Amino acid sequence: MRTAYKERIARRLTWVTALIILIVFVLIYLVASFTVVRNIDYELQLETDKHKDQIFLVNGEIRFLHMDEWEEMEHSQIQLNPIFIEIVDLEGKSKDRSPNLRENHLSFSPEKSLKNEAWTQKIGASEVRTRQIPLYNAGKHEGYLLLAKSFDDTRELLDNLRNVLLVFYPMILISLYLTMRYLAGKSIEPIQEIIEKTNQITQKNLNERVPEPELEDEIGQLTRSINDLLGRLEQALKREKQFTSDASHELRTPLSVLRGTLEVLIRKPRTSEEYEQKIQTALGTIDRMSAMIDQLLALARVENAKNLVREELELITFLEEKADQISSEQKRKITFQSQVSLPIYITTNEKSLEMILDNLLHNAIKYSPGNSDIFLRVGKSGAFPYIEVADSGSGIAEAHLEQIFDPFFREKEALDQGIPGTGLGLAIVKKLAQESQIKLSVVSKKDVGSTFRLDFPSQS
Ligand code: ADP
Image: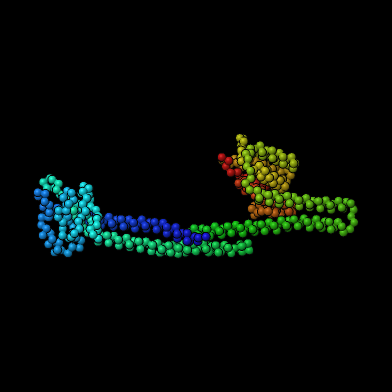
């Protein structure tokens, strides 16, 4: 069975408090009984001292000196808590006793007098606290004086206290449990509201948010975290939609061109040169489409590839080879520059880094005049290795420095000048860099050139 959270909080708190209250009640009872017993024992001691001198001890006879006076005193005072006295010889045989004992005797226990401590015993139906001291006559041990004081009032007091505590204990616990349940319910009310609101939010109303409480407490933080999460989800969904619509648009355009070309071709008979030219156009369009599909697949692959394998790589050799390879493939001079002489080792996914550099170097070649310089630089900024791809080409307008990383974004000049491209390369670069924890940045000035920079995390 599922127990409600408020129920659990209330139960746990009640258990803990029950234990604490139990300890406190037991302590109260023990302290109270210890104090009253100590008081009685003290009174007993005073009485013993008082009565010890009123005993007649001569020639083996032991008795009260002034029994008649004592009796009188006993009768003249209203004895709320009477004293019982008995004198016994060494064998414990009763020699004399106070009249209020009637037919009862106080029990004799020689070892108690050695310890000089009081104890509780029964006389008929009553309980008494008893003390016993040895009696000496001229240094000779003659017997014992037993003194007892009624313990009934004290017992009643202690029993009452115990009963009150026993009755109060469950009552306190029940009211505590109910109060805690109520308070716990009240404190989790905002969570209930959050649950209800979040349950209502679906893909259709992802723009709605959970109302944020005014207090800056944990519930406020939870609400804010949920709202932030909803915000991120909304953005991701928007980007996804935008991407799908951009992708279909980008693919539909060359398809329409292809269709147009073919329709024109079949409208009437053509010369073989005309056929060749139109087919060439159609093939060019197909090439562009397959390049775009390749890029789209690459982007999808990057998005799905999590936790790429990382291996150690020596950057200087790797980049030198890369510059040579692209340079000979594209018939363009790429100058490799290393700012440090010692090898630079990094741990990264080689394939991802290769793809990033391919895209950046191809862009540098595409967007700069054929005779301009392209640099591939490597260096270290403190403990952090970095790579730069710099060109002196068309540059990027400041307003577009962020947008160039969005899928399908291309600057107008690139489109107008008919520079081939899909607008997906830098989006792929950005994703790959994120995956490999590489910081990607760009500095560019229109008609001066652009520098793309990759900063690696510390390798130590
Ligand atoms: P593509 O090159 O296929 O158009 P990218 O995503 O690689 O797509 O680049 C997006 C846009 O950023 C390019 O269309 C271009 O306008 C601009 N761009 C990228 N690199 C450079 C560069 N080195 N110099 C000037 N503009 C650039």
